[in-house]
Length: 98
Image (cartoon, rainbow, N blue to C red; front, side, top):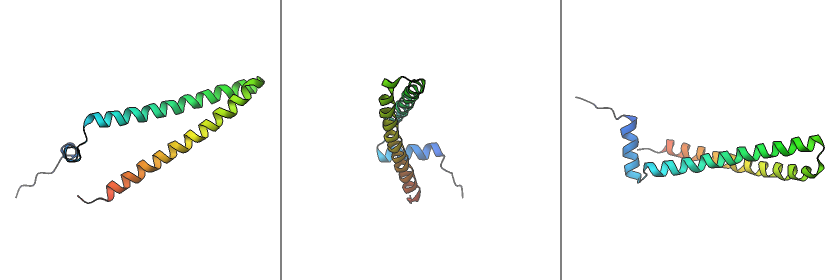
């Protein structure tokens, strides 16, 4: 009796073919995720700049700092919710029986 194990690459290819997912879909999702993380990082840097200007005593940037801080808090909450959904989806997939 000869048993041929399925390699992870061929198993993934089979799953992708069955689900209709192609490489372009992975690339598009990956690009959107990278853009979102880059925007989050840019917002943090902007808030840091506003904080530095506020510390120096430039009072007109105080409101900018407060606005950027609130934006960052909301972005962090969205990022955490997306991460939680991805982890939930992964756990659900891992519970599936093939």
